[in-house]
Length: 412
Image 1 (spheres, helix red, strand yellow):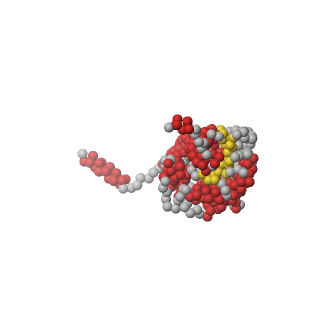
Image 2 (cartoon, one colour):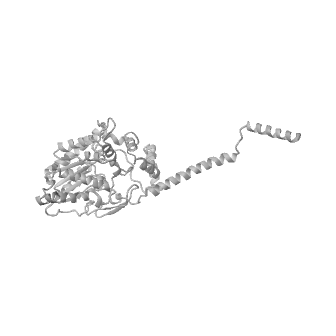
Image 3 (cartoon, helix red, strand yellow):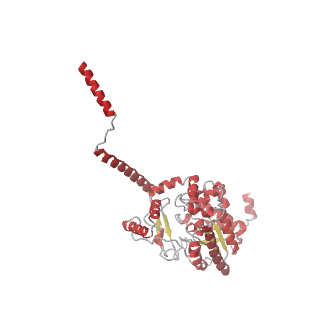
């Protein structure tokens, strides 16, 4: 009994001594634990990236495959397909003049009022099936309401900012229009001042090899090193990452989070046009727009063709308009007022669709959250807005036709 008691005391004492000292991990554990942690991180990251790729697949082909370097418009009679991560697979079919017009270029049919539309990707209907774009929907409804045969020939092109529209305006006039419809967006106006003053930012030349290939990666790395822009290149690469796209897509579906990011976060440099008082950069953009508008409208006046311009909001501007409230120092209507002043000062007509967005809750949902281009429902909505403004009397040739008395009585 005494022996057992003594043995128990010795074990208790040994336990107390060992409990007072920190146990050392074997060297094997010091190696295995970090490896397991790193492996766990890699598995999680790989799984998240795989989910992102599956959620947002994209095509290897692009509409840009149909565009030639230095040319205006697409390659004549070309057809390309593209699916961007947030959009649907879309066909881009161009006629013999390189336009996505849905018709052949050439003389207009007799007794037809021809509208030639100019602008950039919104006008072109980028990432939307052509038959669902407002360029396709607009003439049908205008014809119905005016009781005239209306044709809309679409010359919207990639990169169709005011400098390019002005430079190639003879193409629009050569189509013998009865009216020029000029679609302007904040992006269009934000791409005037650099061309105007010759201070275009340095851009990486097009690399050889497919995007994401080793040749493409090495080219981007070389450009980053030679221009001391490694940080910007890394940031650009992160913005192109599918996991980044997945996270931003779902975060930007929140109107509040999206506007916070746009105004004060990662996209704050784009928000200058929303300021109540434009900064120096946007004053340059407005000055450039004014110069190009003057050239476009003067040539139209000489040709005897009226110009009708409209500002179409981007996603952030549409969100603010829907909210009908915004922080101090911002005004989503300000740019529309500036465009109106520019267009009308040179003899053109401005139609205003911005107030219509007040009646559309969360109108930003009609745009891709990250890419920013609109979807097919947006095109239907814009078509209705344009029809209402174009037939309101602002454009004499497009006034709504008076209905016969019998038709009016039938409607009553």
